[in-house]
Every structure is written in C-alpha cells, then in structure tokens.
Image (cartoon, rainbow, N blue to C red; front, side, top):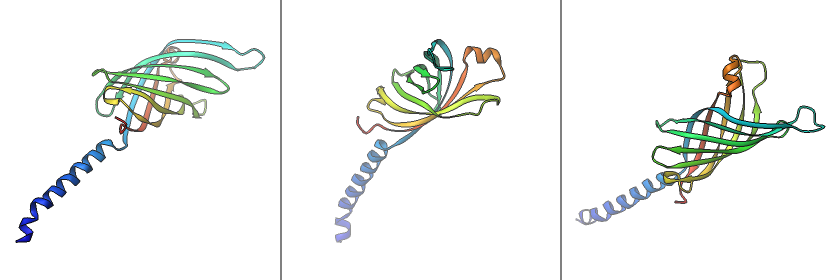
Length: 173
C-alpha cells in the first residue's frame, strides 16, 4: 500500500530529474563543423623596407559557409597579414534567419609543404560574438585551408576552400 502512495512522489522525482538532464544537455558544449569556399575581394600589400621577402597587408574575402545541418551563411573575412609573423582577422557569418557569428582567427599553426597540388595551412579561431540563436556563444576551434596550385586562373582569383571544426557553449544566454 505504501508503494502505491509513493508512485506520485517517484514520478515527480523522475520528471524533475529528466527535465534537469534535458536542460543540462541543451546548455552543454556542442560541436560546429562547416566548410567555406571564398575568393579574394581586395588585397593591399607593401614590402617592408630592408627586410628581404617580408610583406605586410590587409585582405578582404567573401564566400559561402556550408554547415553539416544544411545551414548556409554568407561570410565576409577581413584580416591583416605579415609574411614573417603570420595573420589575424575576423570572419562574419550571416544566416538566413538573421543570426550572426563572428570568428576571430590567428595563424598559421602549420603549413602545407610547398610543391603539391594544394597550398594551405592550419590555424585556430575563437567565437568572438553571436546574435540571434548564437547570442552569448563562447568557444574555439581550428580550421584548415586548401587552395589549388594547378589552376592559374583560380589561384589568381584567390579561390580557397576551408574546413572549420569547433566546440561552443551557449550557457551564458
């Protein structure tokens, strides 16, 4: 008889525990993987006086980011580079629902050896800002670049392929 009286209490405990676990999972760390194809919109560079082979500059790239879940975002990348020290910049992604993501990136962490079919590098990024469904985003990740060395026209226009993978948390919402 006491077993039957405790059923409502047991069901209430299970319900509260289940809701808590769902909320915890929703607020936990998630993975975001996407691919970007972009081209150079504008590059300005200057040689550094008395530093052989050192060039500094700014660049502007635009492209489309394609996500594993089917989302597509327009992407604008702006950064600075120094052929001796590396590069840094930001990528702003805008989604069809109006949500945005801003990534802050630096690199390279490694480079593809010269002479192959592809040039490229690996680098790291952090989620710098988000709006809409990405409001309060925090996290980081890595990305790799691949650009074709065999096609002079595509190479001259700066067509490049990137793969991004990162982890993020939205718990600050």
